[in-house]
Amino acid sequence: LFARPWVFLKGCVRVSDLPLDDVVEIAFAGRSNVGKSSLINALVGQSGLARTSNTPGRTQELNLFAPEAGGIRIVDMPGYGFAKAPKPAVEKWNRLIHQFLRGRPNLRRVYVLVDARHGPKPNDATVMNELDRAAVSYQVVLTKADKLIEKDLAGVVAATAKFIAKRPAAHPEIILTSSEKGHGIDALRTEIARLRDG
Ligand code: GDP
Image 1 (cartoon, rainbow, N blue to C red):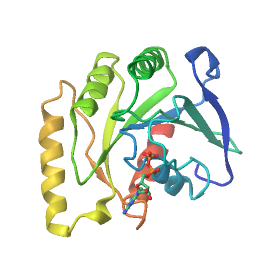
Image 2 (image 1 turned 90 degrees about the vertical axis):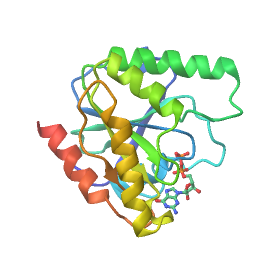
Image 3 (image 1 turned 180 degrees about the vertical axis):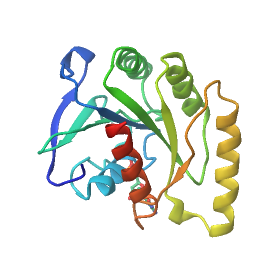
Image 4 (image 1 turned 60 degrees about the vertical axis):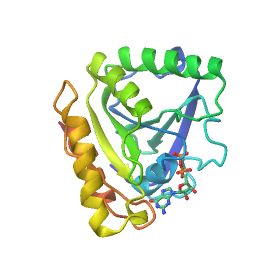
């Protein structure tokens, strides 16, 4: 499933740009700079695939990636929560995400990335509300675990679990990752393979 090479398929600025087929999709969402591109690159084992951008909030597109051999598709959702984002851009983002989540039967799960140092923020909750309303399955992935010391990791996982427990739907366990150190990447691959086959 994670056989290389993976390729960039296209960037979609509207849902009508999305391919109409039955390929299983997994999406990744998170605040700008959460480490989303790094995680996607680590997952597929290709450093240059998703663009690690230094201009947070720049890409307002759904970027699609797939293995050349097919079988699955990754949807890289535009980062949110960029403080300087102009209001119209935020509204455009909201509209795109709303339409994407409502009308995507092949979407199996959204991975909501949260920086392990900061825990879930209000705009993560906004996205989770949207996911709950659209009845889309999601799982929280804590990123940049290597930036915390061991004893603080347990605390952030517990706090995040408590945050998630308040959500209306039940959710799979939180995955702790570090793209830098490779931590949790295999666990994520296993989970995604199971989603594809399930
Ligand atoms: P994106 O905006 O969510 O796509 O975030 P990026 O993947 O571009 O990462 C944002 C910044 O965080 C970059 O400077 C990365 O090098 C750094 N970063 C991403 N993942 C990790 C990680 O696992 N550990 C550490 N220490 N830094 C990371």
